[in-house]
Every structure is written in C-alpha cells, then in structure tokens.
Length: 297
Image (cartoon, rainbow, N blue to C red):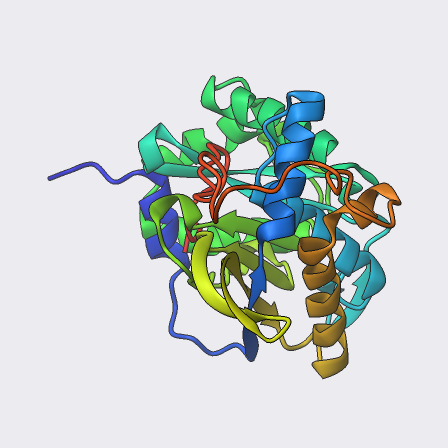
C-alpha cells in the first residue's frame, strides 16, 4: 500500500460535504498592460515578477479598502486585523506537498518587494529550512487521518480565531492572514475555484488562471489580446455585494493600470516600441515556482 503524503492526509482529514454559505465570483481582465508592467519591472530590477505577485498586491490593496474582509471571527463576532497579510501556496516535493508563504503588510510593499520576499520564503521551504513548517510536518507523517481531523480544526481555532502564538510547535498567530492566493496558470488551466480550507480560517481565496490570447472588442474594433481569469471564493459571513464590488474594482484596476501602483499617470513604456503580437514568452503561462494548485482541500 502506497504511503500517503501529508498533503493527502490533510485533504482527507479536512474534507466534508459543502455546508458553508460561500460566494463564488470570477472576472476576465485584459492582461496586456499587466504583462508589459511585469516586463518593465523585470528589466528594471532583475526580479522575476509574475502575475501572481501583481494579483497578490491587488488583493492586499482590496483588503485594505474593504476592512470588513480583513479580519477574523471569534466567538461569533467579527474582529479586524491590524495588518494586511496574504498567504501564497508553495508546491513542494514535486507537487506532493503544499506549504504557505505569508507576506505581511502586503498592501504597503512594492510588487518587486513581494516577489523577492516570496522567492526567499519559497527557497527556505524547498531547502527544508523553514523551522515552523518542519515542526508541523513531523507529527502529521505518523498520525492517522481520524486524529488529524480534530487536531487541525482545534489548532486552526487556537491560531486563527484566538490568535495564540504557538511557535514552539510551529504555529503562529493567524498563519494565513486574511487571504490565500494561488494559481493554476502553470498547469494550463484557464480557471478554477479554490475549495475553502476550514482550518485556515480566511475569508477570501483568490485563484489565477492561465493568460490566454482571445478575441475582444477594443474601441469598436476586434482585436486579439491577452486576458487572464481571476476567481474568488469568499465567506459570505464577511461580504455582501458592496464589499465584493470593492474587491473586484481594486483588482481590476491594478491589472488594467498597474503603473498607478508607482504613482504614475501613464505607463513608463509609453514611448517604447510596441510588442509584435499577443503573448510574451515566459510570462503568459504564469509558471512561477512558488505558485501552487488548488490547496490542501
């Protein structure tokens, strides 16, 4: 009998029939300016910026502008977080395991700073140098799924609702922040929805699909332009239509006009030669190593 991975154990232990009141939404956005902005940042800084970093920044800004999303529930009451923290999923062991890399104060950091921080965090995880992650993995290798289920729910409540600091056993307060960002673009999938992970206790899950050239109407004319689909799974206890509109508006603006993140009124490449066609090798597939699939559920 094949030995189960920790990821598979967690998936089995935390699965249950859907019963939560979640909201699922998606939007497809023109990605041409986002790709040009990513090219610009790579050329200017040498940092391997990707669509995931840009969307993560946008999600952080949206949480800052819709504070009823940037919080947690404790004993049935909503409490706001003092900072905007977003977690990204990291694929390990050739996709056999998953970990999270949390970027704190993401709304205040530049996209290149987010990319550099995630690269460093992912490198530590891949090398087995993340002490907190390693502490949590050890017991899970040996425990049966029927024990893991109540264990992860209890520890999730301690850290994600009470905010207890349990770093001695590898558990930090609010380990996933208020949002989890992941991607299926590197697998060639256009879109998907993240299944909620109960022990993570976050109100928002954002997923990025593959960037694809598609026919669209621009100024009354048909053009082929790169587009990206972004989906969200949101806990209905935190959001109604208004907050959802804020979330979508902020993310869409960042993708369409990313230079505004730098306080510019126009793109820095405005005088540069136009690209020869849709798609840019190395960018369209969003194949960054730190992005991961749907998550542990």
